[in-house]
Image (cartoon, rainbow, N blue to C red):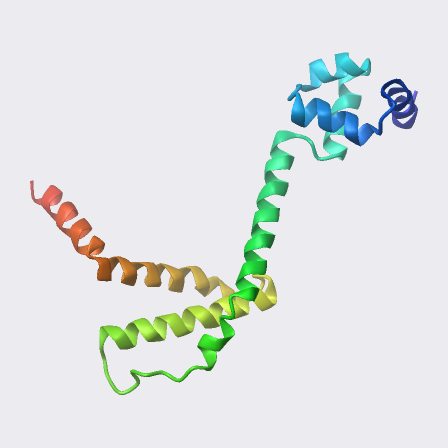
Length: 160
């Protein structure tokens, strides 16, 4: 028999679509390929093919979940109105200060976020976004005193 013939037999026996049957077995019950094949009365390779086809393998489901999370983050980035930050004038242009640095880093982060969003992360320039986000994080840690605390802890361990 062919895959489609096996599919027809299983669907008639369970009176459900194969997708629903595979969902129940793989996701809800968490059966492996041997036990799932035994339950359906098909060869292990057929069960594995169906599991792969419907994307119910553990790794496939995890990957799909992460892709959905990234899509949600992409949607949130677009709706954050970061473009307004790009249009605002710089307040600290004639000075070299931490406030000016922080403002410029924020402006550049907003710019690279916009590039990343518009290109879906495919623009070469978008690769600078993690760097600027990290610098923003460091600035926040500096202002909270966390960075100084870490420096003191690391330097005292080195000196011992």
